[in-house]
Image (cartoon, rainbow, N blue to C red; front, side):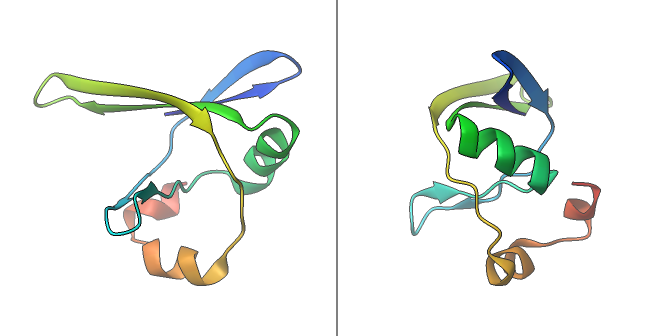
Length: 84
């Protein structure tokens, strides 16, 4: 889940965040225009991840950068990602 800020209130939504360990980043795929507007206005976000089978989870706070890198999107896109 990614939580951004909209009009001073938290706005949460599901996301797909495949890791790229070689570059130390996670890229998120979600409803891009709305999220880009929110991140550009206030880049502080929270990400949460869950492994429901293992009953594990993690939460991360930090700053996000929103892009519309079509080459990266094509590289990361999977049939499952189409939901986002």
